Figure 1 (tube, one colour):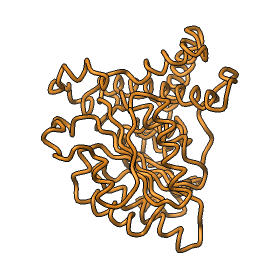
Figure 2: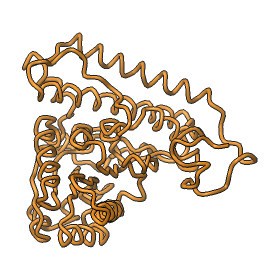
Figure 3: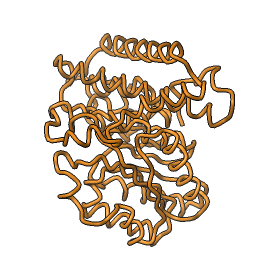
Amino acid sequence: MFQAVLNPGALGKASPFCDSYLKAYRLALLSRILDEKFASLYRAGKIHGGVFMGRGQEVLSVSLGMALRPGDVFAPLIRDAAGRLAFGEPLLDAVRTYLGSPQGPMRARDGNVHRGRPLEGLFPMISHLGAMISVVNGALLARRLKGVSGTVGATCIGEGGTSTGSFHEAVNQAAVEKLPLVLVVANNQYAYSTPNSRQFACRSLLDRAHGYGVEGCAVDGTDLEACLKGVGEAVENARAGRGPQLVVARLLRLCGHGEHDDAGYVDAKLKQSPLGRDCLKVAEELMQSRNWAGPEALAAWRSEAVQKIEQAVAQVQREPGPDPFKEVWSALSCRALSEGVEES
């Protein structure tokens, strides 16, 4: 795993869980502010393509990234900026990819969320509609054939994606092979604009776990403590040889499907329900109630995150753009363009 982005600092020495909670919150906050910066650049015409924010899903995503360790495989999706940062993705990787810098991991060949560092276990996304589950399965099977043990593979999906053939085929494969797969489902109530009532008829998406013979658990996706514990336990179970684990988190996407979408279809009653809570505000209230962090610390962390992001954006905006006449038109897996090797 590459270098972590944040250090939790000197606060929160009451317990290891307190330390983890503070670190998770700061990473989730960083991802929220990073998403907001990308949205601002998109509206200013500085970003071409799509911007997909994880607003409302940050604490679920960060919990998965933090539960993984070096040697694991992680295939994040469109709303997983927090999980990427927790897994160790450099802030510059995200900024360079969105702004089209050839110094980014995708060498300016792809935008937004299709970025990664496969050699370090961070897989670039193909699609958020179930395609990454089988990719992670393949990596886990390859490790088994090589005699590598003790590692976990993880990916995420929205509840809409659980209705695709890719999801069902890959979960069945993982179950039959008893792979150490952790699949986190963010049930954010809408598959783009289609509500749950028009997506599935089962009582709970956990029924799908039982149908394939895999273990599953449900968590409150707005509660950082619940996510850290639930997702962390699922990762531990998979690592201990208990086969695939399905985690279903209930929450509400607090933004449109992308910055092109105003989310006018979202039921106002859902926004006022517990599902509509802002997960970062919930975390802030808990930290203050337990005397883990006060208003001054929260303000300082936000200021630090803003400064880091502004510095990264300013640096990338000074970098030269891609030159098609000097581009080496070959696969990124070749030596000249592979991870950690500068183009000659």
